[in-house]
Image (cartoon, rainbow, N blue to C red; front, side, top):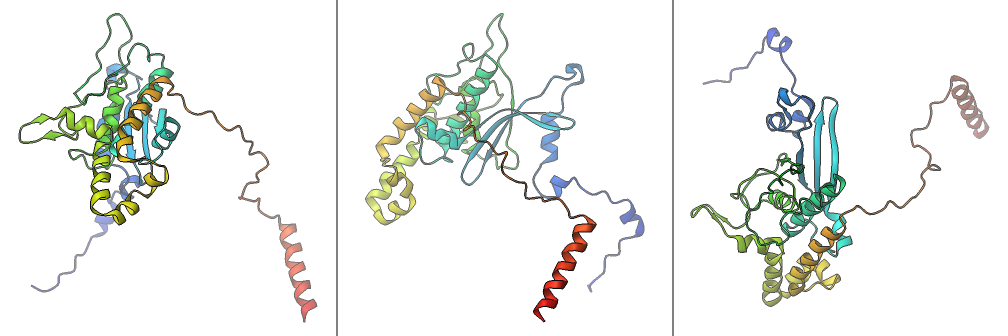
Length: 292
C-alpha cells in the first residue's frame, strides 16, 4: 500500500486541547497527582499531606507537602546532604542514606508539631514491618501518602527506603511490604534481616570488600571518596547507626549563616530612558568619527 497523507481537518485544530505544561514537559503524572491531592468534601479545607520523595544524581529530597488551588506548600523538608552533620560523609544517595533522610524528615516534622515525644516510631531498627499506632486520648499520628513522582516503583527502589525511614521515624504512611528490599515475590515474604542490612549499608560494605580482594584498581575508582574520607567496609554499619542516634537526638536544621545580601546588585538592570539612549548613540557616533 502506498503512502497515504493524513489530512487533519479544520475542526481537528479548532477543537484541539493542549495538555498541561508539566505534562508536555514530562514532569508530572496528573492521574497520580489528582488521586493524591483530591480531598473529600466532608473534610472541607483539611490539608491532605504527601511524603514527596525525589532522588537526584547527588542528593535525596524528602518533603511533606500539601496542596491548595494556588499551588503546593512545603510543611517540612530534609535533604541527604544534611547527613554530613550526623557523620555520613559519603554515599549520600544510596539505600541507607535514603532511609536516614526519611528518618530525619519524620523526626524534624514531629518536633515541629510537638508530637516527637508522643510518637517515637521504631527505635530499634530491625527491618520488620512497622506502622504507627494512635495513642488513646491523645492527638492521632501524623498521616501522609507517599508521592514517588515519575520514579519506577519496582521492588527494592530507593524511594521506598525514604518511606521506611519516615515510618520508623513516627509518621503514619499506609503501605505494604512488597516493595522493600528483601521481599521475595515467590514466597510472598519479607526477609527482615536483608532489609536491615540495606538500611545499615551492608550491601555497600560487602561490595567494597569484594572489589578490594578481586580488583584493586576498580576499588580505588569506584570508592575513591570512601578512601579519601578513611571509610573502611567495617565502618559503614556503625556510621549509619550513630547517624540514626544523632538524628533522633537533634533533628533541627542547621542555623543559617546570617550573611547579608543587600549589597548584591540585581543582574536585571533597569532599561535606559529615551534621553539616555539618544546620548549613548551620539557618543558612539562621536567616537567613530574621531577614529576616521
